[in-house]
Amino acid sequence: TVEQGGGMAGTAHAAADRQAALQHLRLEQAMATALERSEFQLHLQPIVRLRDGRPAGFEALIRWIRPDGSRVSPGEFIPVAEQSELIYVLGHWIIRESCRCLAELDRQVPGAAAFLSLNLSLRQFDDPALFPVLEAALADSGLDPRRLRLEITESMIARDADATLQLLQRCKALGAKLSVDDFGTGYSSLSYLQRLPVDCLKLDRSFIGELETSPAAARIVGAVARLAHDLGMETVAEGIETPGQAARCRELGVDYGQGFHWAPALPLDRAAQLLSRDQAA
Ligand code: C2E
Ligand code: MG
Ligand code: MG
Ligand code: MG
Image (cartoon, rainbow, N blue to C red; front, side, top):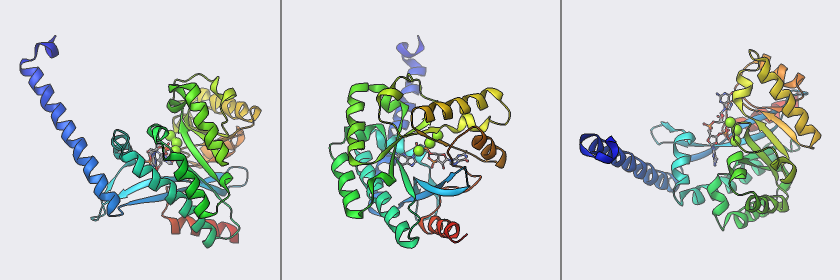
C-alpha cells in the first residue's frame, strides 16, 4: 500500500504527523502557562427544574480566556490535557474551584442551596491524588457533599467494570452524587445501571435536538425518563434550545433541563444574579 511503500505519500504523511505533534506540544505548553497565569475560569450553566422552571443547580464548564480575549474551547484543549499529566493539575484546579464557586454562591445567595455538577475525565481515575483532593476541597469549603455531582461518561464505565465500580463507590463514600453525562451516545451495555451507584442520567443533546421532529427521539427520551425513575435516578435533558423542547421534556417526565433556552455557562457573578432573582420572585 501507499503507506507501507513510503515515497511521496509516506513523506507527506510523516510531515502531517510531525505538524500535529508540534501543534499538540504547543497547546500543552500554552496550557501549563495559562494555568500559572490564571487564564482558566469555571463558568456555570443553570440546570432548571422542569416542573417549576426554577434553577436548581449548575454545571461547571471550564473556559480558557486568553489575555487578548480570545477563547480556546474545552473540546479542543481537554483532549490534549488528557494525553498528559496536565489533566491531573487541571482536574485538581477544577475540583477546588467548583467547591469555591458553590460556597461563593451560598455566600451571595443564602438559602438557595443549588447543586453543582462537575465533569471528571477518564484519566482522572488514574490520578492517585483524585480522592484526597476531592476530600480536601469538600472539607475546606464546608459544603454538604451531596450538593456535588460528579459527571462521568459511559466510556469511563465501559473500560473496566470492576475497577470502575470501586472508583464510583469511593465517590459515593465521599457523599457526592454521580451523573452519567452524554447518556445514550456510548456503546456500553445498559446492565451497568443496575450495578453502579448512579444517581442521575444526563440525556445527550442529540436526542433533544430531534425531539420536535422525530417521534423516535421522543420515545427514547420518554423511555429513558421512565427507566431512570424506576431505578430511582433523576434525569437531565442537555442542550434544550427552544420552549417547545423544554415543554416536551417536561411532558415526557424528564426532571431537569439545561441549555441555551435558559442560559449558556455564566461567570460566577451572573450565575449568582440569576439565583438571587429567582429567590426574590
Ligand atoms: P458536556 O459535559 O456534555 O457539556 C455540555 C456542553 O454543551 C458544553 O460545551 C455546553 O456549553 C454545551 N451546551 C450547553 N447548552 C447547550 C445548548 O443548548 N446547545 C448546544 N449546542 N450546546 C450546549 P463546552 O463547554 O464547550 O464543553 C464541551 C465538553 O468539554 C463538555 O461536554 C465536557 O465533556 C468537556 N468539558 C467542559 N468543561 C470541562 C471540565 O471542567 N472538565 C472536563 N473534564 N471536561 C470538561
Ligand atoms: Mg458534562
Ligand atoms: Mg453533557
Ligand atoms: Mg453532551
